[in-house]
Length: 257
Image (cartoon, rainbow, N blue to C red):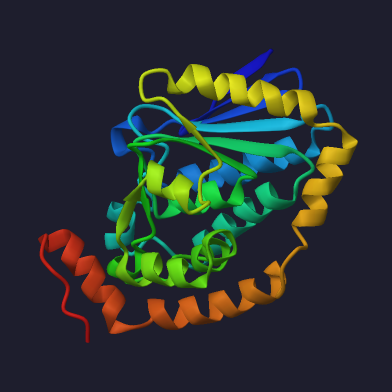
């Protein structure tokens, strides 16, 4: 076993299994600049490790992740470089020859949902809350809408994205967003059992099948990625983003221009 702790996450390897634990429990594992940089780096390390077959992603404390760090957003610290690094990390999860499994408990909102969507298998508790409310924060929710539509259909994806509403883990399971439901009181034990099932099944054929399924839809990630960044740049230059930043600082409802 190899175990080491970075500033904002914990990384551990156990034979064919790697564990990545988001470790900002005081902030519900919100994605700060530092955490995203560490995730980008650790995912590259995992991708290059030929011994690893399964990756488990969990969050310390009460949530997988509450999404983007709103304090950093309100200070104007979320920039183009952050967005590129974030999408590079997510796409690496989608395309690496490992099966990536996450446990969604408490909240997996915004970036937390985007992270879950980039994983191969999502495990959740029935009471977990999820949604993609970035439009309320003055941003396009990265490539979340593009991924979300592939899982639950365009109509449901539009509703969740445009309204920014939250649903619980049971509804997420009912609409195909979550693959496994686990009990509230023994979520971690049930998650471990599910993990071991995937470890036992991840031969070369399974890993090759994952990579084949990554090419199931058009347009490609690269095509959508460039278009998304063009749109996001326009949004970030708008007065509405300044309004969203002020809304967080002043704790009031937004008035879009």
